[in-house]
Image 1 (cartoon, rainbow, N blue to C red):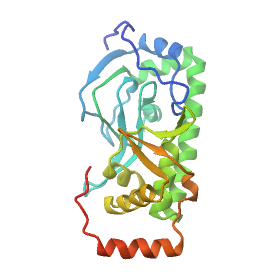
Image 2 (tube, rainbow, N blue to C red):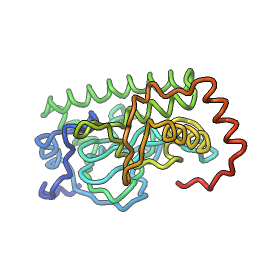
Image 3 (cartoon, rainbow, N blue to C red):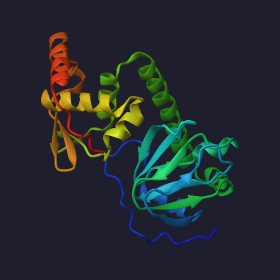
Length: 247
């Protein structure tokens, strides 16, 4: 693989970014072991069940990690941004466990599996970072399995919103660009059900739209409708003529 000098500016995450991002020193070190690549939006970088072994480190842009069934229906496992990486599961030599597609134009460092193994031997800091990331994935998978088995759609939507919320200047903001269908794919529900939950959260004063972002106004954990509210909302939905859902 052609090695390209690490010279492009990086859209580095700030301290409020989600866990799993690499610091600048490790990013620069990784660049010497891989090549810089750019891809347009909606490019499939990794296909589930493929026998490939490269790891991708995002510098600019966002991707979604997802799985799909025979019917074509998708479930979104995660979305990743600058400083985060994916493809490390191939270290065990097994086929890819998920697909990854770009959500917007991205730039990334691509490192082959062989060079990644060399890098792990030379940079124990990255090995420890990888261990912590994989532990986090196991913890998150445990929570997701429990939620899918025991929680209703309202609780699952609230959990995802809480995961996405970041405190900025004393306010909780959700900056992730998720459509209602994206949210539905993430929580394992229909878009209509997700629309109902989001509509309730807005009408009840828990969420507000602000430009392209959402603001959390009240603790989402307290947002479950009471029995009377739920019955009233159901009756209103039966009376209302629904506008087309936007995605």
